[in-house]
Image (cartoon, rainbow, N blue to C red; front, top):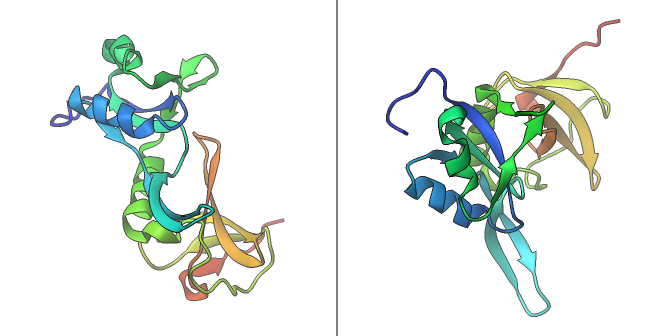
Length: 180
């Protein structure tokens, strides 16, 4: 299924049981499906230690590229899969540009997603529309937001109703003039 791109196949969003994303992904891959589970590293602290762990960027969600009419029930029979995410009673089709954007962010920015690791002293006001003009996210638009006193680029993933916060240098973004 991963070799040929079927015209009817699309990206869909699956909802999983809590903490079942990796096992469900492995089973789907074993069955021959093209699956995308965005992973990022985060520093976890327990009472006795700190440790970097890999965890899903979007908890309880997996992306799958499939022709849903043919594989719907086979996919739902995978242990850990709860359902296809639906909008207006139909399985939600994820825009391939959103998949590409998340793949770029996870693949090239890795640990900087949502973590204050790069200079966040941007010009402009919170809520201003900005566009990325350099780096792997070039052309991406978003809004300036604060988190813990640092400015971030907020990127909306409309299909999922999710937001990703990315920190990057000032020279990578430009303000988009407000239109009245």
